[in-house]
Amino acid sequence: MQLNLFDKPTNELPDGNGKITAEALFEAYFTCRKNKRNTYNALAFELDYEHNLVELLYKINRGTYRPRRSLAFIIDKPVKREIFAADFRDRVVHHLLINKLNPYFEKEFIYDSYACRTGKGTHFGIDRADTFIRKCSENYKSDCYILKLDIEGFFMHINRYILFERLQQLIKNKYHENDRLLVTELCRIVIFNDPANNCIIKGRKKDWEGLPDNKSLFHSPSHCGLPIGNLSSQIFANFYMSNFDHFIKSKLGIRYYGRYVDDFIIVHKDKDYLTSLIPVIAEFLQSDLQLTLHPKKIVLQHYNKGLQFLGAVIKPGRICVANRTRSNFYTAIQKQNAIVRSCKPDKAQQAHFLSSMNSYLGIMKHYKTYRLRKKMMTRLSAWWWNYAYISGGIAKFVFKRKPVRKAWLRYYS
Image (tube, rainbow, N blue to C red; front, top):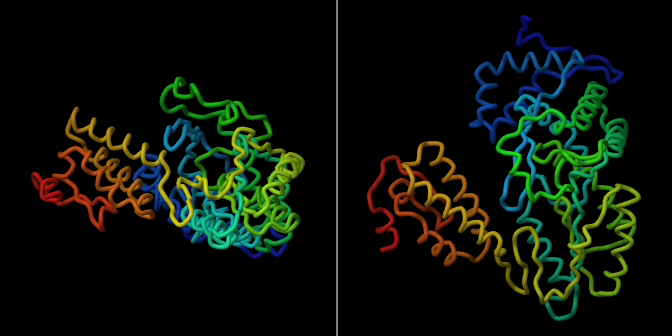
């Protein structure tokens, strides 16, 4: 099949039957490859990306696009999770949809929904929770209580029919571009694609041991579940919960409420009132979204005891890094030390070292952890200090152009 990059589909039909444009798909591709450019899948696509994109555009506009097989594997940090990595070509389609629909999603989301939103995220959510506690307790002068709740097996129990029906309504009522019908169809294909039915297993089946059934797509009901690891799943899940957010804020009139994915908190002066909310919230989640509160993750306590939220512990007047993050950082250092004891790290291992260390330093630098970070660095093998140095007050690792022996001695002298 001979395709011309400049044979753009027309976008002139007024009834929603317009086509996806080459500009929109190329924009999605360049956004997608920013964080995935070094993966094998992305590099293979990039070898002839213009032809691959035009071929993908042709299939989308002809209605013959179908997702390819995903890669399924298990990660252990920060907690054990099942990941489905979509083919890079399919990730481009996910970015295409999110680029088109995100402006409309943003109008639906409340201010205190933190996941996967520009200018927000975990640190923003932590700061907001700290603000809630300070305001509700009148700068720690009066009592207030925190209700923290979690949804059991959240991603695996999202009802695809409910999600798609509400997405259809949003597109019908708010999205008035000419490619409306094609965007709706792409959403249908992405939402109802079940990667567990035809995936490539990376690792061993033994890796799944110890993972609860309600955290695996392989055990989800046939009409439920979104794969963790896709951008579309994260944004669609946020949209799925938006009705719940509005129920809490508008129907119940709760002022101090915030949510990150399936973790949410409510801060209030009245402990009995918070207790009374638990069955009300559980009923709405079950009836409206077919989701269940996690019975073992219901926490109701005075703010003096501290709130563990999004990898931090919020205490009166200060925010500390959670013990789990410290433990995971120490484990990561031990793994890097084990590598240099067995062999000289290759370029891929060095790149992994850099990303691993900087991810933890990036988290910890937001808190008063200078002494802790310095202590952790003393546990790092001397070999790494010949090839890397710390910048920004123990905030980031940077590789040197040429190795310098005993650099670690000079750093700590």
